[in-house]
Image 1 (tube, rainbow, N blue to C red):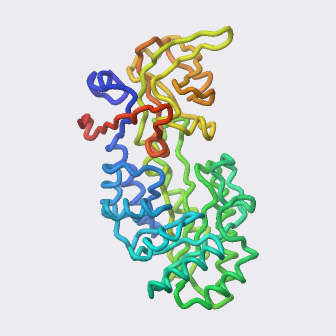
Image 2: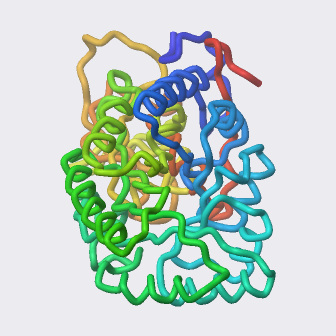
Image 3: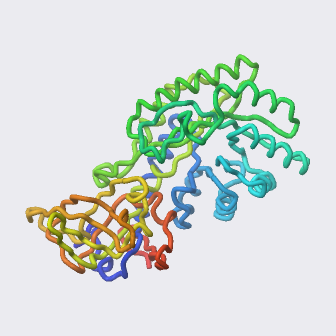
Length: 391
């Protein structure tokens, strides 16, 4: 029997392939929706994590909105069925065409990251005789203590408007009839494992919100971004993120009025654990110090280990005797790059050519970041629901 309690169907499928557990996604969405309702949190799903159609269909059915970072993502959200009044657009480098498309689509809000961007939006909106709903993405200078490549909220990062620039920015907005400031937006990073970071963020948001109130401005939307982590080390034991604790922390940490809403942008925590990458061992290779398992999947299917030095739990597809001795392997892909490595010193039962491994927690930033580098073909996608493989 394999990990998913199915027959030998998964063994016979051509590797590499992505396998999505829609049952787990359903459970995750239910937990997230229940917690959001409990704490009156507005959830927007971040399409950048995964825009796979069957996944989006279930997310839309939950009633969540969408967080988009490009014009094509807005188009995808609308085509998939997200309501335009629940779609937000972020991104530090929105093109003129993307801004125009977002305005024509009448989405809920554009999260703006610089004075120059505001000037462009104002010009485009004015030319269309429209009023652009905007939120200011403010850089709170809060360290998230995550990987440097996914940190977004310190003064050295490219994202957001500096706090010291708020007076100038606000003055400009107040002079522009084509801009309607409706919210504040914050996002300090992804996969934040130290939850106390969100306490520090709340403190900064409270100060900034109070500053706006002192200017006579009470904005209805306080968008706290994403960052909620998942457990890559033990995805079986902790298959669903702790939405209740996260939402409770935000609700209790923020000092907002009754007319202000808390919004969040969740991606990884929604879909991360429901997707896995399944791959076959092509070769076993031993050097003086290292024993390699060379897979038919590589950084073209899952770039996170190469890009972020990220850890993904790896295990055999077939369930074996847990009393068998374990061996330490360096698990690598076939790509002509030394960084094409999934993990070092990975403990696995004795493995041979033809064995199939599962790389867990690949539902976010896996398929969506895949490429055809080395002219490789895209991996096939399969789904399972109600404990059955959907073909």
